[in-house]
Image (cartoon, rainbow, N blue to C red; front, side, top):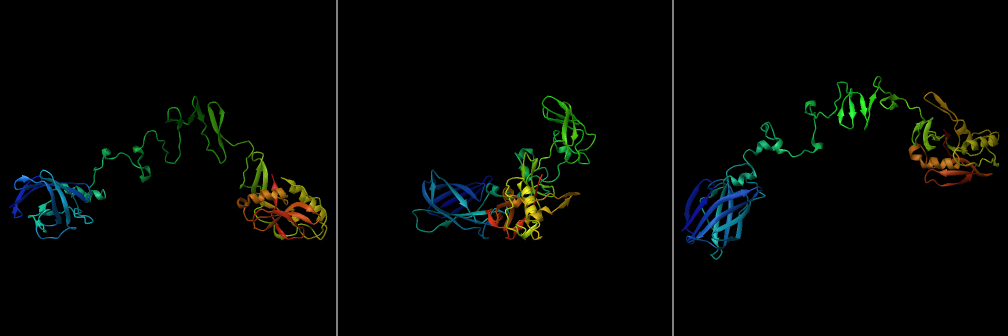
Length: 402
């Protein structure tokens, strides 16, 4: 006669079934943090603690009898019993039998490994006690979204840190540290001192390591002004009086700066567009003009020599004249000292073609002569420089110096 006793945390159930004179005492003690949980029982054989290997089947249902099975039956053919105690790991996934918190009942079938085939099902099914329900508590729905049901349910002791990037919204001024400098209603930071030694913020002052500097705030600064110390304890906003530093890519002097030297005090400016998309280098005569200067500023001399030598020939415009006659007015100032760049200046322009912009990938004339019938030319596709017949039509971009 088989006697099965299922022991929960608070009650004892007894029932009997014939099964090869084996007595099975099940201690329903289970723990779970995932869908997998541990079931531990005690098996006795003829009133003595069992030892050896047994075969067991475990099925989960939604009712004490009948009902629907949840998941599949778990069969373990090698359950080791030692001094009557056995432990098995049960996992009914991918089913989620504990998701809703409803009652669940475990059905167990057992046989000796040496017995003929066939399991004997033990009845009644055993209701699982609260231990397995740590998978999902009955109040878990309220915690899913921390809704209105969660009032003061998350406290300081539950929080060890928050990623600052996850914070959004407005934080009230009263919640901020006293070390935080606040703006007034006009979004202006006023009557404050930034003190590097004490990390405090007080009146209109700046503090160095040893000295408090008063900041004259009688007038707001204008664009381009800098805060300048007038003595060891006073500073105010002043317009810089030193030389202006220019930079490549700057819009200045009627065009775009493409070369600077002398710490940005001087350089070259390119017109913002081509002065011609196809024009001859010469004015109609293959003569030795001696316009062979090269380097920064050399193009201005070359241009004057070319016009003096070729101007009267056929009266048609050529590379030097279209640059010389170009002018542009920007900000009320008219810039008219443009010229055809020398070979070196043309290459400097090519190196900054992307910043200046508006160039073709074709050939551009320089003002540097090679011989009676030849002058230097450069392609803005790959930077190649070579000589070309002076009657060849090519692009022209004027430059000026500052």
